[in-house]
Length: 254
Ligand code: ADP
Ligand code: 5GP
Image 1 (cartoon, rainbow, N blue to C red):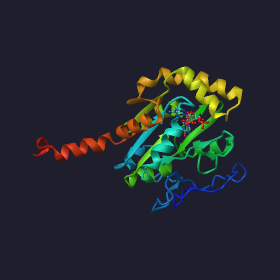
Image 2 (cartoon, rainbow, N blue to C red):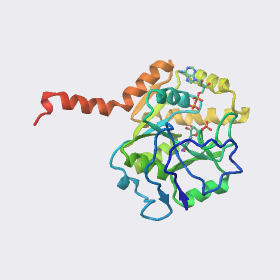
Image 3 (cartoon, rainbow, N blue to C red):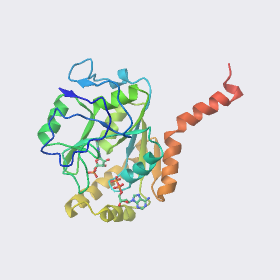
Image 4 (cartoon, rainbow, N blue to C red):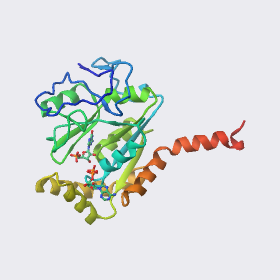
């Protein structure tokens, strides 16, 4: 059984692969001051439902997808600086940490065996293989945060986004597009953190992802970072704006 922490404070562990046990405490990537009030245990059917919608009454799940290197992480990092109340899910992955990546902050870096155990425990909201590694969203922190009315962002690839579309159709699905394929390749290379083999896999997977952009509710082109952040903000808070307009409009009165 995996027990989730009552605190959302980020882990400061550095090299995690060896330390990671399945008893690891998971968190939602979040502002440090955020707290989860109640620990959520998974492993018992009532606390780990297959139909997560039963647990989600409030809050909002937002999926952000798009090819590797398009700038999802960069966009989100800047966006969250202005919106500390939003939370980004911390994924589990079997990929090796890149230089500077911190376990429990950027990802939970797991062995394949640990990842498979999470699948067997039905502890992942979605998961997929990408460029030779597994990635997945731990389910319990998402349910807990959303049940508290928080907006939670999943930054995931296409297969995972499709799974979430089935299990949670209310989720807003956003696809980030590059200005062009050339620029996408330049960004992946400029990031300078992937081997030539990994870059080739990511570029070939990018074609598959780009072909599926229309499946998403909204597409945002990450050309100018500032413009893309402003658009992301509009899209994420569109429902709040609509609700505000309704309460202020005389037409909405009974
Ligand atoms: P992803 O999370 O989608 O894999 P990253 O956020 O790691 O992509 O971005 C890939 C590279 O592109 C990084 O070097 C980042 O600094 C750069 N980048 C992101 N957005 C922009 C932008 N709007 N203009 C120029 N470079 C960008
Ligand atoms: P990277 O290795 O560059 O960090 O991520 C590779 C891809 O995996 C990216 O497209 C990223 O959005 C996606 N990804 C990250 N976490 C998850 C996850 O939990 N589930 C799925 N399905 N994809 C993920």
